[in-house]
Length: 233
Image (cartoon, rainbow, N blue to C red; front, side):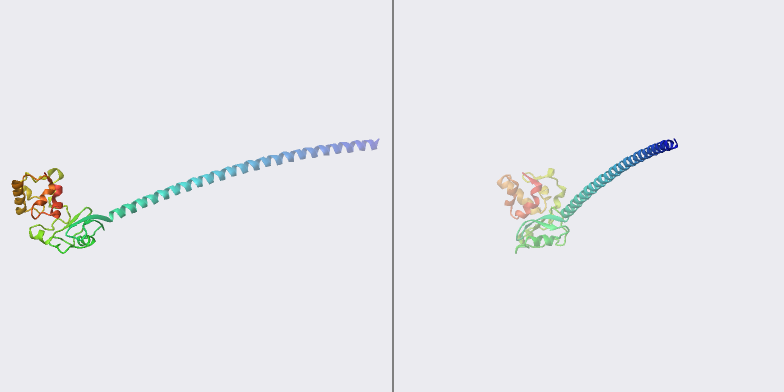
């Protein structure tokens, strides 16, 4: 009887222990599962954060590259503008070896323009020219011959802004109708040449083109270039 009781007691104890063990195992399994899920969530959040950081860094890098590119373009434009401002174009004509338009450095002097054109011819003279004058873009340097200077023409128009600046394109002088005083307003035209123009009109009739004025004695191409923008027929 006692032996049977002991067996039953052992069975009950074993059953209780097995139950307790099962409960503990189940609890530990659920706990591990929960921790595993937490680890996965944390890892997902970390990965998401890293991705956002990388995207932000990439975006910032592209923005910086764009700013550097624009800065480079601005620098190029500034350099280009500076290059343009550092050069001028000057028309050298008259008694020079090679008349033409020359590109010079800003701040160049009249003598440098003449040197660029090969220097003066044997007929060219410096009278009336300020060889040290500073040139500006668009100027015209005219070197006259000895004959032209002797006849009253001078190199007073090296900048070809000439003394006729007061005459705009709308105030051109008509060489077929202008009076002596009106003709004298033209650069290089004095009393003698103005009277010669009037005498030519009276003898041969009106000028057909403005270039016909070069038929007047003492008015050559250099003198014509001085006044052509200020006369009409």
